[in-house]
Length: 409
Ligand code: UDP
Image 1 (spheres, rainbow, N blue to C red):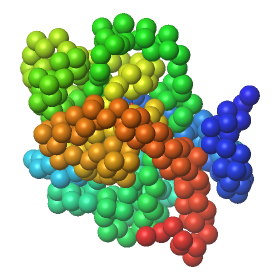
Image 2: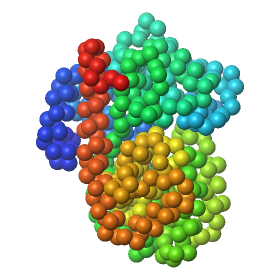
Image 3: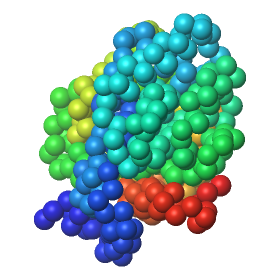
Image 4: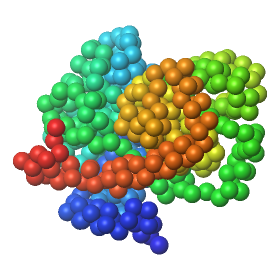
């Protein structure tokens, strides 16, 4: 069975026909995706499945990664924070470094394609250096919440936007006024990947055993990079409020490093400090390819948390819902698209709020299971890769045939 036939089993025949129909109209186009890391974080997670699937559908697709010094990633991490509204202090030299590293990458990289997707702020200046060599259309794919950015950082990024033909945001609330057309396309997950495919009970139990997690006891789980916006300390605080009443409760915080995230070590240290010597809190530092481990953890959780304070989309939420787990999510960003109170989980604003909703789900097992089933179907309908690609293909056709502005906001 080839890849497309396997997808058809999950998404259904009709959905596959619609996808192929759009893809046929783009057959032979050359597309390149560019981001800043091959491992860690949601963008790499999406590109890993998207690139092979686009190729199977007849669109000649490549994935390239920019490279830079640790100092470059310090600056781009500060951009990331500033775009999402966290105040940062940057010097003129920092902006120049971003510009310079983009210039070096533009000279080194093969950007010859019909469409170049530039993901997030890190490689945003690449088209500025191509001059007359720029042949394809450039699309800026912004995965983060850019609605209230720090002014100096946004001015720097906006100055890079002139060569772009379109910008894509995950939800309308994230978009900024820009000269080019904007499209709203939420991300998605791959149901066949190691992260999301069904796994055997034996593998699940073996994974828990290997990590020292008791399969008989109820477990709270948050999977995310060790990043302040993901609020791991808030998760520990919520667990601490519940623990006196639910003695069997265990908490697992699973994360890993991302090449483009230099702040992780510091946040991890704070997490260890807060966790102290509580044997029922497991802080797991996972390698970048621990997809099946995360899959097993998500399937083993009683309740999944994603208590973010700011969030792009929150693929971890999608992954947990797909596995039939209700999610307690911070009321921000794309989490609000996915978590709906009493249907797929609960949105919360504080550790106390999270503890209150977790207690509800621990108490009412039947409701927990029902919300899990609703979450699974909700993801099938809205957040699987077929819908995501369908939106991208429609956008590319709109760009090829300007005047058809159906999807443009
Ligand atoms: N992830 C992972 N290992 C980790 C932490 C996260 O593979 O240690 C994955 C997670 O399963 C999800 C993605 O990285 O697929 C994170 O995407 P999300 O949108 O939740 O957050 P981002 O990191 O992009 O802010």
